Image: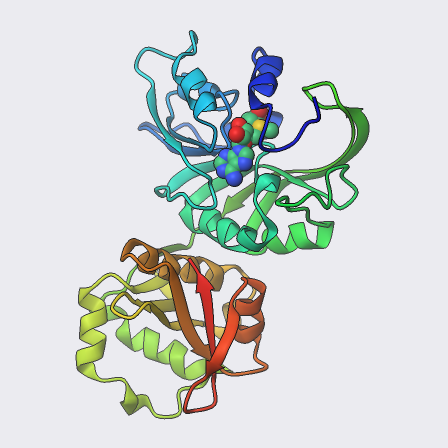
Length: 339
Ligand SMILES: C[S@@+](CC[C@H](N)C(=O)[O-])C[C@H]1O[C@@H](n2cnc3c(N)ncnc32)[C@H](O)[C@@H]1O
């Protein structure tokens, strides 16, 4: 049987049934301090639970997400499922699924199975879901991997992997290249990045009225998409955003370092600004993912935003897959993306 990403998973689950949890998972777990209480993990592309079962065994609550119904049926039927397992399952493609905030997002040998055009938004949601101090564990595939170029799969070179980890602390970033066989017995050249990465102390939360002076400070400090007329944003508009989901800040050690605003009434991302001294740390990416989530939850399939041409912001949105659909009356780019 030729091995591909949409068929033959049952053979894969059979072949890996007795294998221990992945090393990236075990290494990530070893880095969490022992504290009372239940921690939440999300296992993306869980398969039949090679890693999920280890998390449950250690008392974690797990949301296992896999697009193959058979994987989750097998997971729920496992004889080694602990009696009081805090397990939820979701049969959905991870690039389309939503999940809660988590202490750990685990994705062992699964993320390369995301189509390239969906990967930036998927990764942004993974990072945004990590609680302060939370971790990502899993694998990405490199450009010399034998499956590079297959339709619907995403491969990253080392620079791209390092870019993904901007704003996270990489605790493990190991590159492996070997000629071996797949679990289903096919010879293959593997080019793998094994990753464990930790999110620092900052987090996204709803904006509050007492944040407004700091939000104005950031808005006036930015170097591009500058606010030329501060009076153009009315008190009523600000109050509406404070009272409705859509206005978010990044707080770190008690200080607001960035904010985003999405308008669920018209499906637009209305603001995304980060303190210029804090750029390049992944703060904008997390705030942007939250803004897009607000619009998705409000029922929008796509979103728009305006930004100035030739800016760092425009490059960021293009890299996330946003496309130009026109110009505003002020000459700004109008960009659109599916959510
Ligand atoms: C190589 S297996 C890895 C399973 C398990 N994580 C492990 O380490 O053994 C990949 C799993 O991801 C699932 N999968 C593939 N593409 C997916 C997608 N886009 N969304 C959700 N699950 C996906 C497959 O059904 C399969 O169970």
